[in-house]
Length: 489
Ligand SMILES: [Zn+2]
Image 1: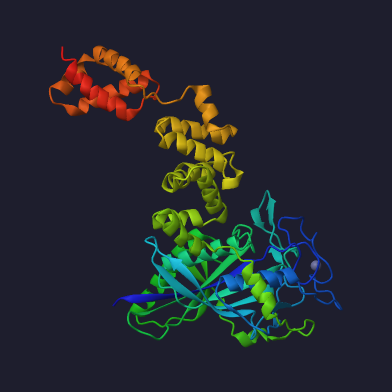
Image 2 (image 1 turned 180 degrees about the vertical axis):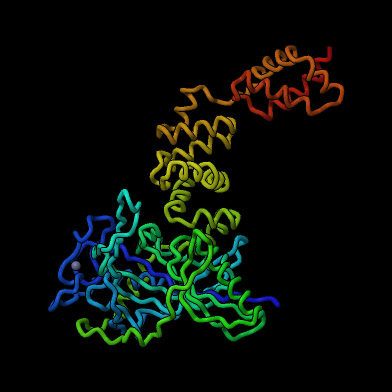
């Protein structure tokens, strides 16, 4: 029997506000433990939370970018549970009146075919603190966990958005595309840095399987803390196969919470699923409900930039780029901006795209830098592409010049002059070299004349070597063939 996998994702994203959700403490990452705390975010008695307006604005930007309806009435609720990293013993979240509902996000496969994935809700909440379990090292026992733990409350009260999708995804690849597009949108609208290593983007997946053609949903398991794009697709694929295996054996799927063990590459149970009422949600009495005005929502909507999927389509229609190029270029706003800025200096979209997707991307990986962290400017890249496209330099020289530009930030025409890299397109100059090469290499010349046409390659190589790779390869090939015929001994 063939099965269908049904996937829904719950994504927690940290908003990049300067201060926390309900107090004035810094929300920045990486400070000394417990250096960014106050009576509010450590849950001292008698304190009152004050809502961060910027966080609400970011929630609104996100909701609108995800095509959601922003509720005219939204409120906060207490989600009660005990854990040592949660000093209040409740988290301020939103339960039955979330900030926004009923949106969608378009994902595209490699060929550019779009599918809309439904967004159920977007709600605001605060983050908890972080527990640290230090390891004790001693001579006798080796390394073991200490019998105490530390708590760092810097993260306590940092603003989060929870974005819940409909169970609309049907494959691990689609889940990957959804998360990639969501991350791109959040970065475009500048509400989060979406850095998974810092924990500012966290993902849980609900996964179930059902026989192909069945419309009822199967029992789902919840896969927690998929904190890497790489593991997400792998973990989902594994879990779907595990469930299919169980059904085939005639066993029932248990509703449970799982974790991905990335060393063993399997899913392992965490704890049995808590029902919603276990949290004893009730309205947060210290905060008034929020009723966003229509005009305010509209003004936020007007401030949104062009979103990645729209830009992707525009790059195809306006610049005639293939869907593949367009998808890569628009994934990060900085790269899409850089691309368009480069075009202002040299209007040759496919040529610029080729440079960005191949050599410049590689340079970014090697140098662990973003596009704006490179010494290569849009103006410089345009100059380089132009020198190459107009035949003034060879492709070999172009690659060398790019490296020099990345290292020094020099302009390409300066490097061409300094290193004498201009392409030789003067036929008479090339002809002189060719005559000499034919004279010096009688064997391949003879082979060529006897019908072994590939022998010309070694002669081309010799000419290129003589001219330090600067000869126009097209002219060399044509002239060589011509002269080999003419100069028969
Ligand atoms: Zn605080």
